[in-house]
Image (cartoon, rainbow, N blue to C red; front, top):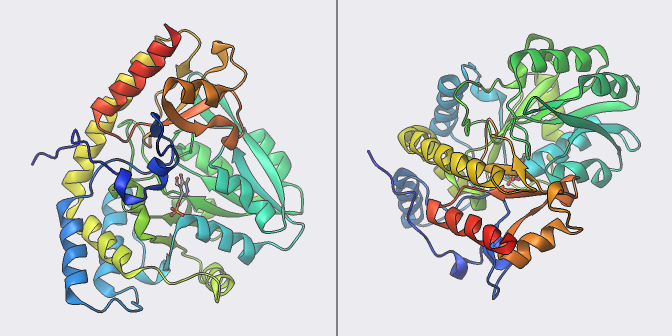
Length: 378
Ligand SMILES: Cc1ncc(COP(=O)(O)O)c(C=O)c1O
């Protein structure tokens, strides 16, 4: 089956968060992490069918949805979960903030890696906790967590929770079994619960890497859980649905309680779309990965040929973390925007001299992005 990822879809009339930022300006948005692609036809059909039925009232997560999710996780990640480990949420960001409420008191320390997705950096403060930043280091072309630093900070008795981001955003590394085992050992020894944000786990570009959900690591099986969603992969983030996989019943109960009265139910159309994606979206997803690999290769060659810029080929995600420190400009974001391209500002992730480019778009748009940057430097 072939899928048309080259098709340009005009999102400007849809109040798209990504496109509205530069409304009326000649700037191609390459920032927020949704893609420019239409989801698989099965997903669209399921949404149409459900809306045509009529009433769209409160909807419980249901058996065939749970089963499709269980099957997807088994097939994709070789993890045999039970349906009752699933807690459906209206998003991963609410889920890791609920985790902070569930497992931390005011003044505790929440560990997060840097650079990182901005809402994750903000979660400690939003929950009246302190942040413990665990840096990622670029070693032989691959970003890796500084495990000595983790050991040191996890030993602080105030450290209660590590919100891990794996695959990493923005760095894109997929953590290896050995890295995850070390993280799990450290956290188990120091009683630090691991809330593992794995939202990008179905977007593995490097076939030599494999995503391993944190609770599959022996030392983490009782004190960790995974946050996942179909949203990034199938471009349905606007439907507001994710799920947390929490094997430990006591953690699950605490997590559920912490969200009560604050966190809304997962939305009916998001549940329907997730089921359809997990049941019928595999061929589309595999084709998407091939397309993204092509985009990544193109961007990698072009960016690394520009003096003053460099990027690594990330293992996963449709995001490129571009080091612009060699350009010698004070304001990297302004440089890109003046060139007519709108990346996510590196400073929001904790690195002033970087820009994050979303390459989840038709190749033609990526070519235009590269062309604008080259023209600005010519
Ligand atoms: C690591 C990570 N977690 C969570 C999210 C957002 O999740 P949600 O829209 O489900 O709240 C993103 C979106 O970019 C992300 O990159």
